Image (cartoon, rainbow, N blue to C red; front, side):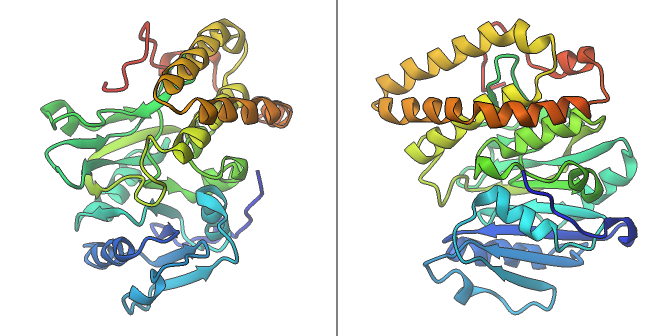
Amino acid sequence: MNQPHSGYATAPAGSVAVIIVNWNGGALLAQCLSHLQAQTRPPDQVLLVDNASTDDSLAQLPHWDRLTVLRMGSNLGFAAGNNHALAQCTTEYVALLNPDAFAAPEWLENLLQAAQAHSTAAAFGSRQLCHENPNRLDGIGDCYHASGMAWRQGHGQPQQARHLVAQEIFAPCAAAALYRRAAIMALDGFDESYFCYMEDVDLGFRLRLAGHSAYYVPTAVVRHVGSATSGGQHSDFAVLHGHRNMVWTFVKNMPFPLLWLLLPWHLAANLAALVIFTARGQGKTILRAKWQALQGLKHAWRQRQTIQRQRIVSTRSIWAALNKQIWPKPDN
């Protein structure tokens, strides 16, 4: 992980920046910014990180004096792109928004109100609706299973009354989330070795270990296309990064003795993934994901030593935050 530095201690109270990391977002990016311009509480800063797009994304940008474009010389990925922008923020809060997420007018205002009402929480998630079918959920936050698997809670489900209730979550989906900037800066931001996928779960886990909670804000609504520039959630790209990073997240963050207690479950989940994705014709991809995970274990273990040394919460509190179904049911 790199170490984004900035003077967050002097940030104006209640100030907020929105960070968008773009790579070939095309017309989706322009639509995202149009919705952002219509917010009832406008952001104080909008930092658009462009990861060396090769399309006409930037040519379609609206004129907006709050918008700053940060052009990268190569595709840094979601994690490093956000860290680059975080280092240049001067606000108390940062909201992350994917270029394929379209925020309702009161999205940012409602996230900020929740942050002011819940002082112990450092991360706040949105009610994400499927763009093509807004009667169905894209998710209400990230759920983390004791096996190390993670998923968006409620993904693909019809909206129900229980999804309209504010509640604590394990972590928000960073496609549309608000964070206290000081909290994530203290943890060195996102882990850039992830590139993308699972980096928000990893950050949420580290925030929880540092004593922070996460909160779902059902009145903060976005419509989300999802994986619009990565080929879809079942693409080889998504499988490779998601299943590699799944291993690193478990190894880095799970406290003793849970690491050893749950290791058989974690190994079973990895074995099941090998079988399932091989049957789907993605055997080479899932094998590559697990091989890369093994190659990175030494680095992940070094990170673990720092993370666990800084942990201030009990093992029991982490156990309580885990989903412990006998076998994961990602539709929950």
